Each structure stands twice: as C-alpha cells, then as structure tokens.
Image: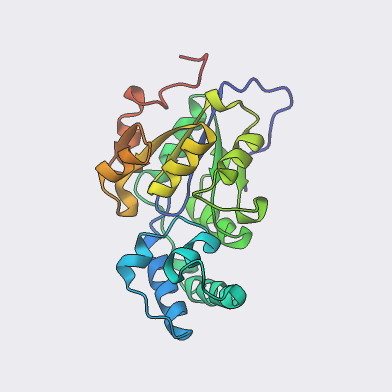
Amino acid sequence: MTKPKTPGEDIGGAVLFDVDGTLMDTVYLHTVAWWEALRQQGAHVTMARIHRCIGMGSDHLLDSLLGEEHDRGGDDALSAAHDTLYAQYWSRLAPLPGASDLLRACAARGWRVVLASSAKQQEAEVMIDALDAGDAIDAVTTSSDVSSSKPAPDLVQRALDKAGVPVGRAVFVGDAAWDGEAARAAGVRCLGLLTGGWTRKELAEAGMEAVYDSPADLLNHLDDSALAFPPGRA
C-alpha cells in the first residue's frame, strides 16, 4: 500500500528511488536467477557479466548478454524462466539496512517519494510489502509503465510524471551505472549507493553527484545531502 495523495498538496520536490539494489538486497538473487534461466536455454554466461547488467530491464539485459543480433523470439521464455526462478526468493526478500527509515525520513521532510522500479507489477508489490513503508510512498512506477527500460530515461520520466514535479525539483537515488545514465538522460540529479556492487568511481562516472555506502549511510548524512530538504523548504 502507498499513502493516499492529498488534493491540492504543495509539493516541494520528489525523490525517486530505484528499488532492486538500492532499497532491497536483491541484486545477486537476480544474477543467480538470470544465470540459471540462460543456462536452461543453453546459454552459458558468467555471473560476473550478468551482475553488470542487473538494473537494466530484460530488453536491454538480454541484448547486452546475448548480443543485439540474437534471436529475440526466445526472450519472453527467458524472462519468464527468470521470473519463476526469482519468485522462489519472494518470501525471503529483505530491505537493505536503513531503507525503510530513509523513505520515511524523506517523506517527513516534505519530499514526495516515488519508487521507480524496472520490476514487473507483482514483483514490485512483493518488494513494497517487504519494505513495510507504504505510509511514506506516494507512487510507484514499474516496467509496465514504459516502453523502454533503463538505461533509457523513460522510467525516470514516468516517475517524474507521477510525482507531479518538474525536473529541477527531483533527485534520483540508484545503485547501478544504468540508474545514473537514465537520470542524466532525463535531466535529473542523481545520488548513488554502493549496495549494487558497483564502485564509487563507476557511479560517479555515470553521473551520480555523490555516492554513499548504503541507505543507512545516506540516512546518516541526510542533512548534508541533496535530500536535506525539498526545494523551497530548506
């Protein structure tokens, strides 16, 4: 559940959160699920390569792993296999330390909080339930809301639409280079977290203006970050 919108509410700004690897400790679960799904179809791709593609939607991920010239006729079956394998972890999905408190702290400071996930709708709902912070979440975007996933800017732009704020009043928080690239393409400021397995240098090069160890680390430094207060409310 997400919190209801208040008609006529004055929105100072919005913070847009990626979910997998940013709020939820799921990056390596996705890596294993894709590894097994590909293996079942006879494609042997190393986990190291797969990990570097987590954060993309399945459309870009499979092109990156199998080559843009691969037969896309099997993509739906591969994606379905990944979803089935990953669903085995649903009951054990866990938020990263400080994730739920970070969402609530942003909401308490006047930010509109929007989750910008590349996950499918049902998977996103499972993660939101695990976060147990629906009282702080204003809106959610999923892969079903856009035609092209990260690193394309579509998901960030859709999250902006749902937040109801202009580009200059939003900040995106993510854990992968693809998040930084998508935010930069949409013209949105971006903060990075190291919880997705990328290095501080890589995230900075992808356009993230500051990088924190984890949601808990960002929460501890909130007063000195781009999320201290929404525009006009400092």
